[in-house]
Image 1 (cartoon, rainbow, N blue to C red):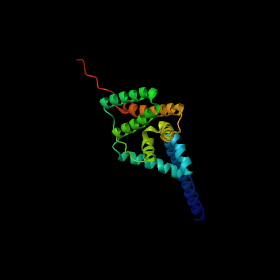
Image 2 (image 1 turned 45 degrees about the horizontal axis):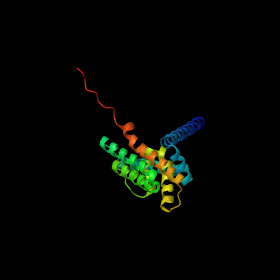
Image 3 (image 1 turned 90 degrees about the horizontal axis):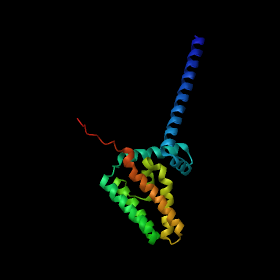
Image 4 (image 1 turned 30 degrees about the vertical axis):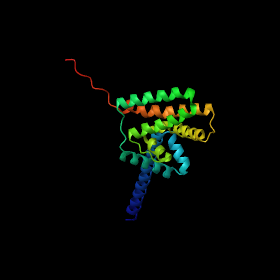
Length: 191
C-alpha cells in the first residue's frame, strides 16, 4: 500500500513537471510569435512596461482592438490619388520644406483615416498601427518628433528632409499594404 502511494505521488509529480514544461514552452512560443510579429515594437513596449507579461498583454490587447476596427484596403483610385498627392508634397519641399512637412503629416493622417484607422491621440494611433505596420513605427515616431520641432521653429532643413524620409516610409507602407493583402487578380479564361 505504501509503495502504491509513493508510486502515485511520483506519477503526480512527473505529471505536474510535464505540465509546467508544456506551459512554459507554450508561453515561450507565444512570446516568440509576438516578438516576430511586432518586431522592434515588441522591445519598445517591453521597455515601456518593464515586464514581459505586461508588455505581451498590451500587445495582445492591441491585436484584439485591431480585430474590432474596420481597417480596410484602399481602392486603386484612392492609391493613385494619394500617390499623386505625395508627389506634390515632395515637389513642394524644394520651395517650402517646412510647409511640405506639415502637408506630409496631414497626408499620412488622411491615408490612415481612409484606411479606417481611428484618429485619436498619437499614442493610440501608434498602438493601432503596430499590429500591421510595426516595422515603420520608429519612422513615424521620428517624423512626428521632427514635425513638432518644425512647429516650434527648431528644425533645420536637414531635420525637415529627415522628417519627409520618415513620413514617406509610413506612407509607402500604408499604400503597399494593398499589395501584401490583396488577392491576386483573377485571369479570364481564353477558351
